[in-house]
Image (cartoon, rainbow, N blue to C red):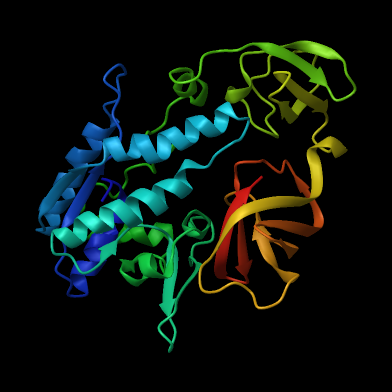
Length: 343
């Protein structure tokens, strides 16, 4: 339980269904050098909700593991010119791995979260994940790396609900967080300026900003602070909107092009690695399905080709700002099939 409305209502629903519920707050991040009182506020709200629900409230500290498995991955990725997605690793390595191990040691049979996703189990015992009823809140994208074992002991109580109904349930049940704003920012770190966060780990290394035609436009603060497709924060002026199209680590050069529809921003195919299939890999390739290359992107038709350990995905339509380090996630309609890292 995060201290937010979604996980609070998840606990409420489970209790109503007859489960013996224990609330656990995971303390994964704090910065003694910053004024980060967010986690203190969340713990306060978490305890208030547990008190209202009359369930035990426990606090578990995973800061060391989170730094090692998630923050290190994030920093190393940006150092190598990638744009990592920490939420993916946070779910696979922390919430549905380390936390579940801790929960089992405490005597729990299952873990539950406030993710907006629907889980179903077929007659053979295979577990499947589907997009949430509330398409605006669906979080299936972030759970694409989960395994059958992890799904077997996981519950997602709010996946069939609309967000507005979750807040209504919380209000009717007198939960003190019914109108608390949704959390934003880096998973468990909170709403901080991304560049400020990165500067704590990666020193500034200025370099040239060039157009793809070879024209010098100015200087950047360091490639690690930027991502493909980014427009704002370049400080190159001129009244023309420029978008980042490439980061060259070898020359420390940031390449941009003008115009949101510039062909330099688009591509029809990508390569990916470490594809994780939620049930079983397709029996035949190339395999046709849908995919998204970022959270909340409308599903795109594509064809998956297998090349030994790596994969090539070819889209029916051009895709904007394909970003190495981010994840491509596959679907068949509403069913989540799996995903992997874009290389």
